[in-house]
Length: 235
Length: 287
Ligand SMILES: Nc1ncnc2c1ncn2[C@@H]1O[C@H](COP(=O)(O)OP(=O)(O)O)[C@@H](O)[C@H]1O
Ligand SMILES: [Mg+2]
Image 1 (cartoon, rainbow over the protein chains, first blue to last red):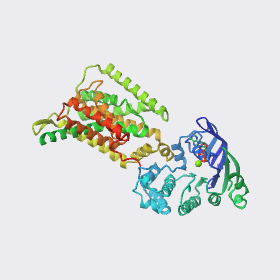
Image 2: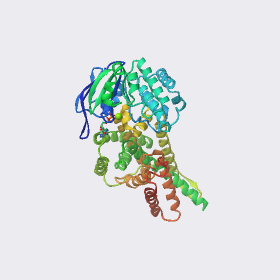
Image 3: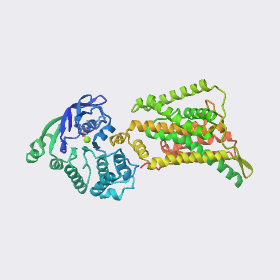
Image 4: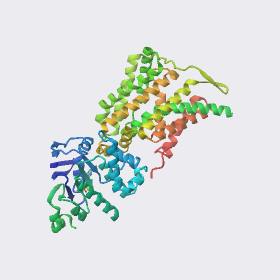
């Protein structure tokens, strides 16, 4: 469904991605691991069209998208939850959600179903729906960022370190929502520092080092043999 | 004395609302795309000319107001697409040069097309009312109310409309807005068109007070720039409050000094703001 083929990405003159390739199949949860600064976030940004690769191909559902504008990718069904959450701070929780809901073809009924679903998973968002996004705690902002992406009814969600800096209780909630999306057959490309969580929720894992994918395996294989994890991540 | 204060209050409030209309378009455009639109005054002036043309052909002031706003909105959209859209993400200096260039072109176009002699727009309401010992024109009250109504409509649209939320989201984080499916380039063009329409509307409304010529925008635009800075660049509510504040101060100051000297008040406010509160007078202190 999503295929990334040997992409090269630059920030100005610095060459960050040196031919990254990976694949996400429909409904699959794929983990992308690697130490800090190896280019995981850059990979997600490149897929989302926020930076364009200089070389290589990105194909989503048979369509080349390497030069497509982000708002078109969102319409095609790619949701993005950035590392720094990027909540619209002055918009209320409800308005943040509306940025994803106010699109063509969403009936009143559909809106309510979508809202009910996230309010059930994240009751705190229902409580704070008329509060400005900027007044939420870090964990609540993370939930809002995920809920906001869900409003697009995406076929795939790019999740960048959703549990970073969260308390264990919130981490459990994020794990639950990943499970829920998985059951609903939404594909997920998950970037994480939390290795045990990633191994637990993913079907397959890619490991990156210095701008390339070094290793690729089924999550089950890495769960039973942690030597590879040791080698690349030192944990 | 109390009488005189009330008169100045009325003058200050009515000028303040009109200034707020000019400043709103400017601050809206700056807020969303970091573009300081030096051509705002020329859009204001062309709006007034367009108003005279429609007025001559239709005889209706209100049609002139509407027609000029629509025409200048379209012109603004075309200017944005051709000159500003290609500059998105570049050094802000490039957009300053671009809008400055547009302003020169438009000003000379107006001079060439309409000539140097000022034209008159006849106000739709010429009656006056007695306010203590002076005769106050109803028309000034009407434009103050109309300005307030246009600003109020803009505010409601931004607050509750689907596209209003798109505009606010894009203003806050253009990259995340695009990742949420909001067509950011289109939103930029639309906002530029709305700001241009507001400039044109104020040009037509002002026409009867100042006479229409190719340089009519200069004074008001200068003041609009001042209140946009005083109100906190890009902050709509701040600009409106600053417009009222500066206009009231000026009105009261003219009790003691001549109106020409009272203009200095806005510069004093500007300098004090830049010295002591450069983020703007009417914005909460950033945390
Ligand atoms: N906006 C940027 N401009 C320049 N360099 C950047 C920028 N963002 C990230 N980098 C650099 O690119 C490299 C990869 O960053 P990133 O993709 O964020 O890594 P990761 O998410 O794996 O920690 C790092 O060396 C980082 O310093
Ligand atoms: Mg990262």
